[in-house]
Image (cartoon, rainbow, N blue to C red; front, side):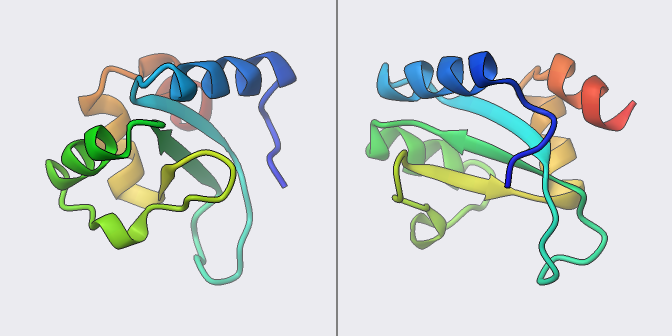
Length: 98
């Protein structure tokens, strides 16, 4: 379940993904498989070749892409925070980590 994100933010992320942009959506999330992680960032793009190339720049493997609904990587923990900062996603970073 996504918490801490509005429907408008979700719809904007979907639009950007469909448009072929690398789009980011961070929300609160809890999964016992990832102790200590309180958020997840979905980095998505409908252009899967672009997404794979982008992911490779961060060491993400193509087999980690979740193709359900909209192609995206799920980013967690310190890795998530570093990518948000590196990609200039300061609004999302500050909202969930500052």
